[in-house]
Length: 213
Image (cartoon, rainbow, N blue to C red; front, side, top):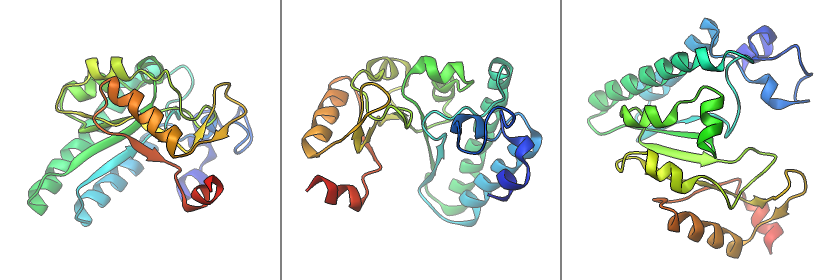
């Protein structure tokens, strides 16, 4: 978007790497008022100008959105942002006459969420989120040892737990294999056994279906 392209100084660690050289460094810093206001306005536009069943806050699976070293102090900023999006969803529900839900795609492990300032269990306990999608980072892909059991214990029963299944499978963070229907079913079975309510398929594009055949 324009904000990202025109204001590199708003990126969380713009000085540390060139564009896409290390993509987590290029995320916008929500500690900047300009970034915060921009994304809140976007969320309000989606929710209040266009009728929908809800909005997904896609934190890009594992992208940090606070400058390095500001994660602990910035957690309150992210919590305030989620509260304001939840309030906008409430306005939208009253406007459209039906529930408007909030989902979010977050790091797969609870410890990873907390380390980057995303206090997801507290958000869920406060009623700020309806669907949580724990998802591994793009360089790892689907993992068998995601914290599904822990997530289920920490999230209220009213929150839908929907762990992500990528089309690719990796164990070492480098090489990856293209999954197939059997792989998907194996991961889904494992996640359901640990307490997932449903699963979230990611990157399952038609071209990947062709690769599978």
